[in-house]
Image (cartoon, rainbow, N blue to C red; front, side):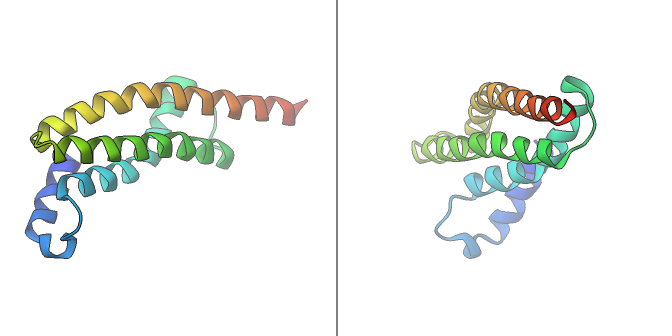
Length: 120
């Protein structure tokens, strides 16, 4: 939330650079994109375990990219419907969490299958 809020305030200050984009949606997209590698690290350490692999990172980026596209569209729609941007952020975060739960789980299983096949 702090990354989002600080980015939002910065974008509002330089809004003329983004005249065709909703500032809140742009901030959502940028912060989400920046957080993917950190999320991958947390999932490896706390949830799925295992060592770092480029294939695993790629699978995680693909999984989170699905959530990124869907959540950016959702955020844009909510803000276009005059939902306050903080509330839109909260709703989008909730929806994205559900999507990511499934897509990251699939990505982790695919990475594990690849590692198993490679070691066999």
